[in-house]
Length: 174
Image (cartoon, rainbow, N blue to C red):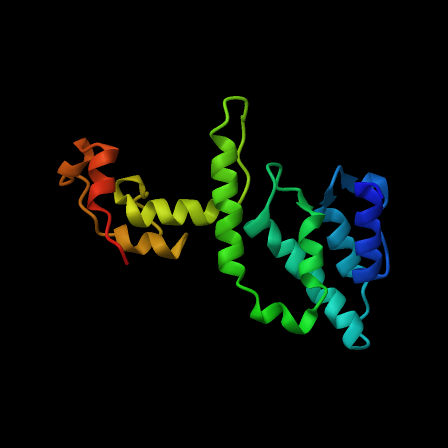
């Protein structure tokens, strides 16, 4: 069975409809397909409501499990949605971290030019752990975690001259 045939089979099982080849890019399904499917679903019973929620999860999944383009999502995450009642028991945070760590490993290759994965999570971690990277925003509501640095005095940050090794040794285990 080819990768596209497996993708088709999984989509037929989950949504009762499969994307065309033009709606895919290799093993990735274009987000437009999920958006159009979500818009066509009529919420008449529990099965259709579940299909609608699964579309939303896949659309939201681009933030957690996004690819480099931000316009597609890999179909390998679809089998996670088979047991709809069990979705709440999954460790989505751990899965997200595994995906991030794998992306960080891949980006260390010499021929890698782009990175995928939950980059919002990586950025938030960097702002918390390395506050000199955090922006000083005039509008603190832009990104709520930036509120931490709203009244930060730019003139008084002697630690800007420290090395990365210094910050690693100072990391607080929490």
